[in-house]
Length: 368
Image (cartoon, rainbow, N blue to C red; front, side):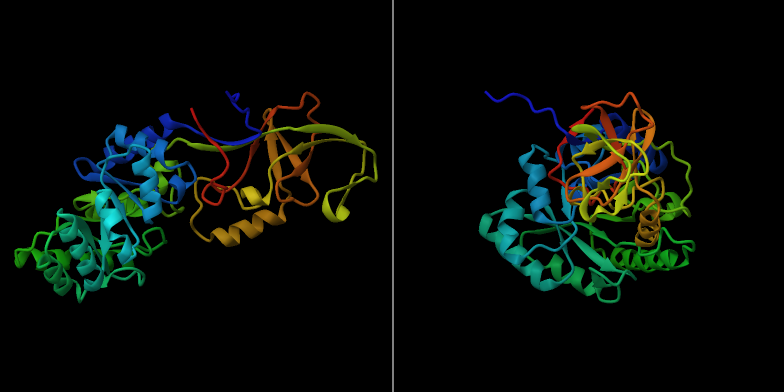
């Protein structure tokens, strides 16, 4: 029997904080349903445990982008409704239907393939119609949406479980364009209602719109970044009691002293100016370390912010003290200066600033 590994690099995820943040959103939207977005490895938190936490806290459904993400959730015992944001490849329809997944449809060709698969399997397939109201990405044009809905309604073994759109600028300074998108979507819903066509649950609001545009809540909202303790931008009202949910941590694996005038790291770009006590940490750019750390606001101008951050000296935290990184960040190693942290020792925990989503999914997640 193998022994439990003491990790030298891991992500610490606070499950109680995830549930708390969900409850803050639920309190804001009241009786409106909540679809918790757990795409991209749960925004870096992992798939199964955060998804289970949101379901336990009251989430009505989950959402991911791709089929392989949804299958991780199903294999992990998550039985809640799961929406796939990206249209599936037609040849994967059988897999998605057998897994009980809700599929996004924005053209009749894919809808027909899903219908054929459902008929062949002797069951019904659930789909959500995606409408492009101004994002310019996925979705049927709002002008063509009525026709598509009518055609999908005529297909065998297809249930339209929902209809939705996505806002392009809800986190920007002005929400005028977001209001225009909402107006187009609501006009479409009114037209479908007039025609007597049931499209299931209508949903549009992302994290920013949940807080800025209550009229967009409709039948369901789709929070993402708010669930993970962060606001989408500085223009969004910061009125929720959000708790931090994520920390990248490592352990010191070696400590030694370097004499003055000693080079450090690749290229010898850093030269010590004094007798320097150093520590080696097993983290690097392959783990996402050189990307700017996320804070309460991170979606706006992320690249510009990251470059500005990189011009400043990188630091990590040990026992409540900042420790600067010396020299280049390597693939999975850094050297830090702990001369002014005399109590630092091998195996001490180090908190690493890094963006959550690009942080390697191979790093173990520990749930507390």
